Length: 206
Image (tube, rainbow, N blue to C red):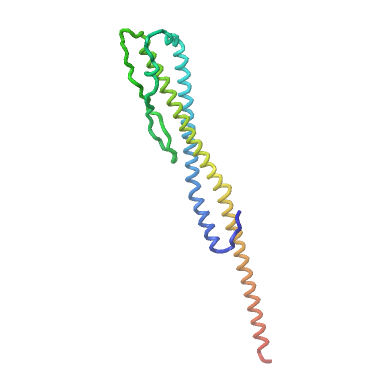
């Protein structure tokens, strides 16, 4: 607590600050709650996508040996994302990317010479690439949300545990000081009045 100015002006300033803290704290608490809920939602979605990715990989292992066949085709260019399309989402003032889709280079090859499994392989590998891109964006979004939650929680704690109790205590001390000053002033006034009265009586002729 910084050095207190025991003045009526400081008392007003502290009361104004306390009022401002009281208005701002519920807003911070609401933001904190919104961020916590969104983190839970995004974390649940992330686990769902990771589970889906694992299941997809397990499914591909069944026929992955086919990829070793000599086909004369290089699938990598058709299964590597050309662009990850996203949109922006804003929760409690936090702006973060949300997955929309993945665009790929069109697969162009001779259907008469390519093995029958190539179409399915390209489709399944593209699904894997899209899932990996979505997981990466979910992790980034959660990181941004958690960063903002940490800052917001620090502010809530600052107001609840420091600023508000400190303002209340300063107001209490200033009120006590001003009250004591007023009591002392009244006491001095009574003493002065009594002395004046005594002096006046001494001046009165017998």
